[in-house]
Image (cartoon, rainbow, N blue to C red; front, side, top):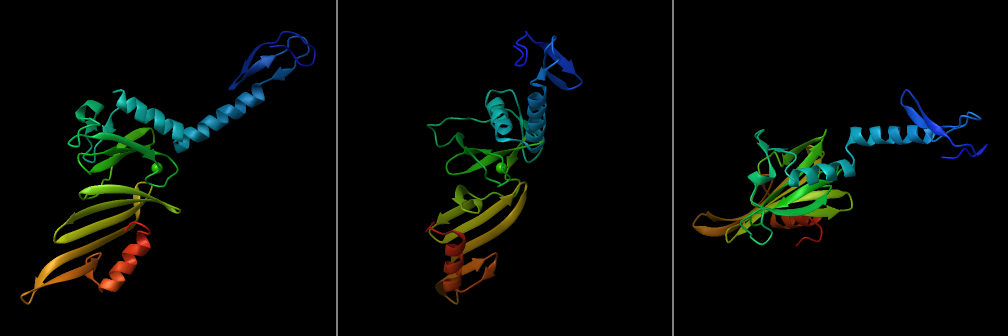
Length: 216
Ligand SMILES: [Ca+2]
């Protein structure tokens, strides 16, 4: 590097944590301030867990270089999962998106069938989420105010939906909708429940449309 002031060849300069180039002729020091800013920037990103940190960690998991903690605390490697993009019985690599709304991407794993989970990156460790009870199918929905996780199960006599909004590792919103066919006094009737409490059909529909706009 050439000194901008006197055009002399500069030499490497290092003092404490500051590095750069110093001109042996005029004493001009360059780069060191910029370098200090870069160091500072990297430290901030690492402490929060940046997108690139998470991406690298997921890549290392798929390369077999990292384990992921199961909800039970087991250290699982990629070989502990059977991945096959063409087989619905197997796990499939899904999208990377900010499922838990903390500003850092998660790795979604789809399958088997319509099930799935996501891998969270936090404090340089990978963990499987959800760590709460998991129902059947899972869908990830993007809304203006953040991602929602929808667990759902539908068969002839029951429709179940659990809508969750995560705030990092904690649950910010959790609503369960149950629409089921039941026998009552010898007749078959449909019952509507929100978080276990029976409600009127009209209210049930308005709430499910309010919390899942555009879904049905
Ligand atoms: Ca996240």
